Length: 195
Image (cartoon, helix red, strand yellow):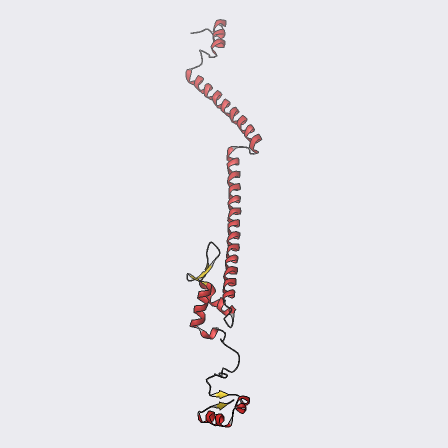
């Protein structure tokens, strides 16, 4: 064994960095402590550089901030998507209304025709409006044919009684007076009427 007062033993300990009198388990514990201290110092340096670069004290805080930011971005994207859907719906409703009202000129009330058909109308990607796969004008014509009470009356105005049918059995008083007596008699015998 080495003499504790031996100066050569102190020189050997200083040269090797180990104390020959220290048991090996204690040396391992001392080495582990030094490693732990070096790792802690390295972690502190990393955290300082990380904070300088990112503004966050450690990786966990940085990750949490990124997740919060992504959540806000996702929320913003969801809001924009909902807003776009709202405008798309408004555009489709406007396109359907315009197409139906433009095609309902023969209806008594174009608004009623629009209300009846708008639920079955679809706007395609190109902006064209169809009803049950048919063009709007065809669907409106079919609705008015199936429900004639919705259509405007066709023909002239009046009581609905036919005017001079022109079949030759009717003439005006002025025309009758221009006829000679034999022609007047013949006209009356044939069942002619004076209007």
